[in-house]
Amino acid sequence: MSDLHLIDVPVPGGTAEAHVSRPASGHGPGVLFFMDAIGLRPQIAAMCERIASWGYVVMAPNVFRRDGDVATLMPTGDLRTPEGREAFMGPAMSRVHALTTDLAVPDIAAYVEALRGLDGVTDGPLGTTGYCMGARLSMRTATGHPDDVAACGGFHGGGLATDTPDSPHLGLGAARAEFALGHADHDRSMPPEAVATLGETFAAHGLTALNEIFPDAPHGYTMADTSMYQEAGAERHYRELRALLDRTL
Image (tube, rainbow, N blue to C red; front, side, top):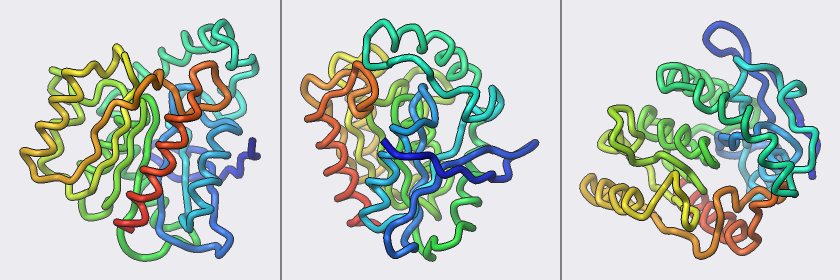
């Protein structure tokens, strides 16, 4: 686990805390990291540090800024037990549902601007990656900021292709990024038919995309501090994400 290194970034109506990880060189392309529903914590810092070690400056904002600061929202129980994870996820999901598209979109624009302005972030395209509900935010970053985002990762994401008018996949016509989406197996929030819809949409817009269900990987498989962790899926996610970033940034 890694310590959080928090900065304050300007957002509509105030500020949001964000963790920043830097490569040994101190500079590189910027990567915007969208946390899962559990929030900013040492596990997220550790993931950011690993991505930064590949040569990127990584920023992970507290997207639940309206609900409290990082210290207030951080889990205190043991998420590695199913009971501990379930106890935390009830309040967490209320925060997820409260972060509606109309609130998320202007926040994303502020995060992109803040990442661009960080010391050490080189000129050129940005990458983004997201986990759980963060995968939706990652996709919205790619579709809403096509001039900035050349790489978009999303892992064990939910609700990426739905029948709602603000479904993330409906914006793909504007995107110019390459995508890498690793879906959880038997995920009620992203069933096979939704994965198929996503694939058809990528193809219709001529976008290059990995869009696969990772075998036996449960929802949350990248998160080593929870009972849902699956090493095979997590390590494949790192391989796919690194290859994507290295190709495009």
